Image 1: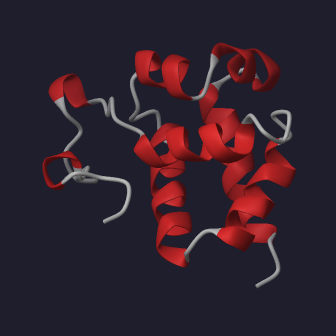
Image 2 (image 1 turned 90 degrees about the horizontal axis):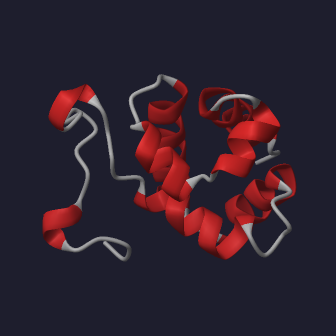
Length: 109
């Protein structure tokens, strides 16, 4: 696995302490390489991500976005990885994740 060390691979069934996920490596990767470089234009950035990244990585991004959408990610993880500007722009991290998932679904394959 190119983004994880063996002991860092997240388990989607493991919500961590307190029932919340605090590790969002694929969203962090997306933000670092695509989100920032495209001026936080997430609709364009996620399209470019889908064009250039392997399907497996896109699937991992969708899984992590689903965790955020369902409120399973900790507020601290979202603040750190997604950023408070996005929370302010979309009102909640859950709303941002929902839109990201819709944009991914609308990409012509």
